Every structure is written in C-alpha cells, then in structure tokens.
Image 1 (cartoon, rainbow, N blue to C red):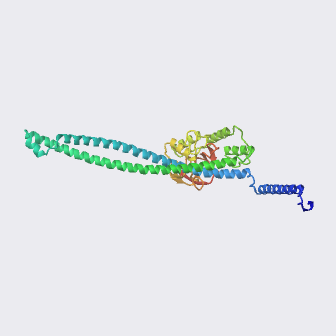
Image 2 (cartoon, rainbow, N blue to C red; image 1 turned 135 degrees about the vertical axis):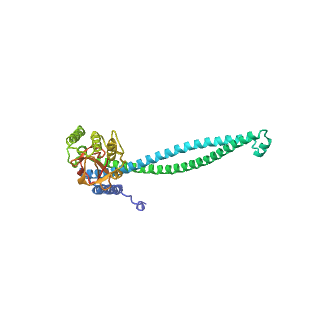
Image 3 (cartoon, rainbow, N blue to C red; image 1 turned 135 degrees about the horizontal axis):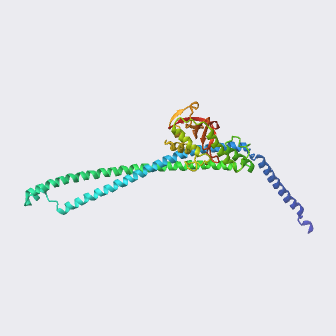
Length: 365
C-alpha cells in the first residue's frame, strides 16, 4: 500500500519558488526605478529658469496687450449698445405718446358719429358757422395726417434702433469672448513662470528677484539686495531722473515725463492704468493723458498715434517700442534711457533702451 502512495512535495521547494519569484519582481521594480531615474529630466539651472521665465513674461505681455485691446473694444461696444438702447427707449416712449394722442382723436370722432359733412351742412341752423368749423376740422385733419406720418417714421426709427442694438450686442459678446481668451492666456503664462521660479532654491530665488528689482540682466549671479532693495532702486531711479538733463522739445512732453517720474517705484500689474499700478502701455497712456494728449490703450495702436521717428532722432517724451510684436513700450527721457513698467515683480523704473530689442519710436503731442 505504501508503495502506491504519491510522493509528497518538499515544502522547502515551494517556499524557494515563491521567494525566487518575489526577488525577481523586486529586482524588476528596482531596475525600473533606476531606469526611470536615469531618464528623468535634469533639474534646470538658474540661468535656464531665467531664460524660460523671461520668455514667458514676454509672451504674457504680448497677451496682455491683446487683452487691453479686446477690453477697449468691449468697452466701446458696450457704451455704443447702451446709447442705442437708451435712444430706442426714448423713441419708444415718444411713439407711445403719439399713439395715445391719435387714439384719443379717433375715439372722439367715433363718439361724434362721424356724419357726412354734406348732411351736417344740411342740418345745421347756421351754415356760416358750420363752414368755419369745417375749415378748422380740415386743418385738424391735416394735422392728424401729419401726426400719423410722424408715428410711422418714429416706428421705423425704433425698429432700426433695435436692429442696430442687436448688432452691437453680438459685437459686444464677441469682444467679451476674446477678452476671456486673452485673460486666460495671460494667467496661463504667468502661472507657468511662477511654477518655474518655484523650482529654484530659496537662495537662487532671492538672487533672481533682487536682479529683477534692480533691472539686472544677470539674474542668476546677482546678489540679494535685502528687504530694502526695492526702495533703494526707487531712490536710485529718482536720483537718476533728477540728474538727467531733460530737454523736452515741448511743454507737453515735459509734463508727460514729469508724470512718469512721479510713478517710479509703483508696481507692474497687467491690465492696470493707474493710479496705484500700471502695465507698460497703461503707464505711457496715463503720462500723456496728464499732458493733455489722448493715446489709445495698446502698444500696437500707440505706435501709430503720432509721427514715427528713427532711433537717432529720439527726443524726450517719445514713445519707444520693443520686440517684433510691438509688445512693450516705454517713455524716452533722453540719454538712451526710458521710464517704463517692466513686468510682474519689477516696479516702474528708469532703464536703458538697449535693455530690450528696439522696434521703433513715435512722437506724440
């Protein structure tokens, strides 16, 4: 009987197989980890982060100017729509008054019986008085016909105003959709820039922010200026402005520069037009507004708001533009310098016009 029993498997052998399988899986997992680590993207250097952040801020500023343009168009469309709507309401009220007046006349005629004039003449005891009244009635009829014609004209005008209002409303909605698109684009670029900066160490971030506040190109190697760095930059900018021999060609140009100088140190905020913060075109628009000159809102419209001048012809008060997309503008103050609102984290300050790729200049005022 014992000879026919099945041999028992060794428990050690089963355990060994399970252990071997476990080790194999662990080895594969470890290999995968190391393999993944070997292909992980290397940590960017501070210089690479700065280059990427600068690019994102430039793209954000271009989107900001598109946002500003869409907002200006939306505001204009909204104002036009409101004017048309108010005019339509006034004309509708006037139309209703005219209709009420005609209704009263018609009711009076109905109550009088509307007898044929020949019958009324035959029945009257005073033909002379009747003929006099008939002449007055004819004149009244002429006035009534004129009133009816006026009502028809008013009705046509109301229909036309309502049609124009509907067109303006469609235009307004299109501009508002563009506004939302550009607003999202700006926020996306700025969020990406902040995410990149978050990858820097605290020391690298401090050096970067100090360099941005000071207007330095070497953000990776600049030394931190400490808590008072922004104030020091502000004082330096004002001192530089005071020392500079500003020979503005006109009183208006001088007034625009004086206004811009008074804004030194105020923060950059995209879409802002003052008085507590500005973006680049918001600053130049506000400066020239203070001088009595109305400029359009965006960089790409401001460049066409005056007479183009070459770089060699620059005079204080001229608008100077940068980048191929005309996405940045500053106010020239002489000596190769300008006052401008650079970008988030960098306050309104004086900077050399060589700081960015020059695209053109315009003289206004």
